[in-house]
Length: 450
Image (cartoon, rainbow, N blue to C red; front, side, top):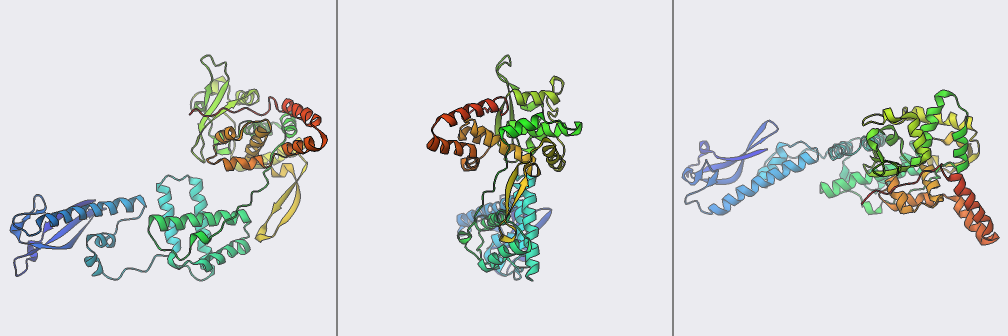
């Protein structure tokens, strides 16, 4: 944006005074507007674009021109940062409130769905991950369908009150059939949208955000036991399933998400010590959180890495593991688990439409690539890895997220109860057995250097 000032001598009044206009160049357009100041041509310096000579109040008038230029440039930066185009109306509102008041009445408040799309443009400009933007896109589409269903497709944000909010929650449960956590996730994104309007745009909302109570139900985390891992590692499988099984096990040994194991390349692999005898580590930046993590590779993880990468494929840019598309991996994993005999029943609780439903499902039907991350977390805690260390390896921003895994380590709970009621001998023997069983299966972790 370029801001300059001119004296409109062609609009001279009978008293010999000419109006001063601001000229704004923006987005290939030009806007001229009066600023409410007038002077004689002898009191205006066009080269410096300032009042001069014997003009009364010259210093104050020139300071006003300076401040006006600053406000216009601030508006330009703010709108562009929000991903909103600069408009004539917005510029006139800054130039002079009186001038803006003389313009035609402002247009009706834009619809809520349109504002949500503007919010997503802002998020994209701030560098939010594509998966996050896709999730917000789903919320936008759901909001649009809801407003259509109640006959209010053009409803503005200012009219969205607690009554609409409660009706929307009911729509999510009864019409969309979303479970509690899916409703929680949708409303959480809506609150982020409203906070943006309130704090960044200075808008007055039609509801009090503090009265929107969110409750997240921590779902049962499916994970494999040490025995399950041993069975899976030794299972006889068709040749095409072996790479799927090995990638899954590698994630069980490292805690990597699918997005991170799929992107592993030679640049992530580092040797410890000058001679490399200290072992190897993976150093990478997580795709989801963009957090830097470091994972020590034990013999089990290293063996799988060498099986597919090997010395000739560990250079920078080379993919380290044979990862397929996520949906194909998840489908194949269920068949792998079935052939490996992972048939023990697991209770699954769902809440369609707010109703609690329970059923027993074979473990193999629940396997997915993310099961490996849960397995790593739980088994690491069982081996005695401190929660704060596990937090670093998993890349969690808050330790409360990591603590969720501590709640599902049933074996540790059972040992405490056995020690309290039956004496310490049996749990001590079991602890030794567990340590031996897990040795060489679950990898250790290396904390990131400060």
